[in-house]
Image (cartoon, rainbow, N blue to C red; front, top):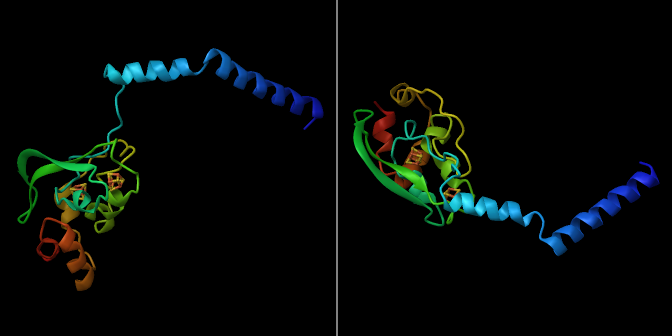
Length: 162
Ligand code: SF4
Ligand code: SF4
């Protein structure tokens, strides 16, 4: 890169920073953003795919900051052994983005599907048939089953031995 171009970038940088310090430029955007948030004009990203969740409370139990609450929903029978009556909700103010909830979720970690929970954005909803997913034949050790069942609020062993 030419010396002239480098000097130009350098001067532009100084100018931009001075502008920020002296005229509080760029802060206007922050203020506008804050106002929009307070007025409810900003749509927060979706962090839970309710349709794909089995309501096992695993994410709720592993979250180190108690950022997840389980919200009651109309009960839905999703298998012989599972009636889903709650789904998680993440409080972004308490979340530290450790991703434990995402990585631990059995839908992701056992059934190898997209995780129904992600602290930043779970992405677009993809049509899924939960009952088909739960019927997948899986190889999982007794030890792992026991470990997971202690955290999940459902009998994973029963679910997998249908
Ligand atoms: S990513 Fe956030 S919500 Fe998920 S387990 Fe970590 S702190 Fe809890
Ligand atoms: S761990 Fe997964 S399936 Fe279980 S409640 Fe949380 S999001 Fe739903």
